[in-house]
Image (cartoon, rainbow, N blue to C red; front, side, top):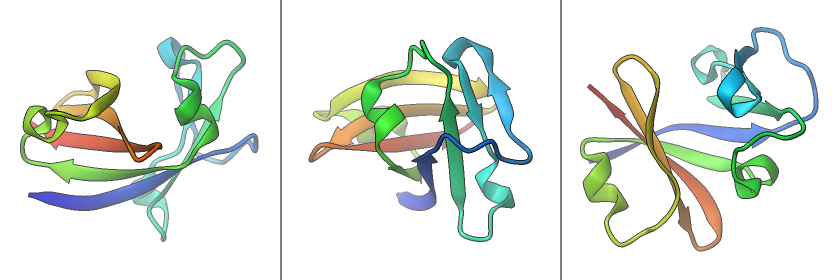
Length: 104
């Protein structure tokens, strides 16, 4: 099962409530605090994150089986855990980044 979670939008604007992810050189807002499920992403120079994520909006889905959802897809970022109990990965669908999220 795949359920819409949020949309992530790159920005250069400093936002209230940003969280800093040092390894990614990335400031990110909490989409659950946004009325429209928007996650703002502000990358520092030299961020190791893929250019496609730094320059394009992405859509995110909660999935039951992240490995199954990735099968046969172009992988942008392999699965990793940005927070306890959450695994995320990014694939590319027709040139656009898509985030897959799995709890547990």
